[in-house]
Image (cartoon, rainbow, N blue to C red):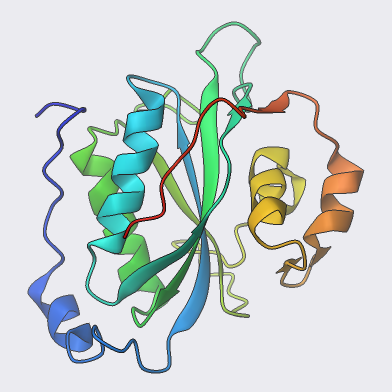
Length: 197
């Protein structure tokens, strides 16, 4: 499977049955924030492919796409990995959090994501940062993301698409970003991701 032309795995039938009736109108959708990152292969193309795959998911509509940021890898020695491209997307969804996570993992796998090491390089990282105002300490899907409030590569693009955003239980994104700073995170004004039509 080529990373430039991935075949996204289908959503499980049970999930499709849950949401296909709501797919046209997205009746009573929830708001979720999803962080995307890539530091292997064609990073921009991969991020766009992930956005398009999210939009193609029954019960998910991509409502906003942030600018692209280039970021030093987190948790590793400088210079040991390529830099990341990062972005944040806002979605409306009728999927419950665990089904949205399952879809995110399927999209990662379609782009040949390998999980050999913690903070290792990856073709694609899809993280649910927040889901409505849900607070959960479930180890499979902790909400909000347990490190989002300390990561500028999440906070900066999130603030761009939603200046009034709040990390549930942590505070306003603008205030958290001021505390964290922008060291190692740079906007790439020469690059652009498309909002799916």
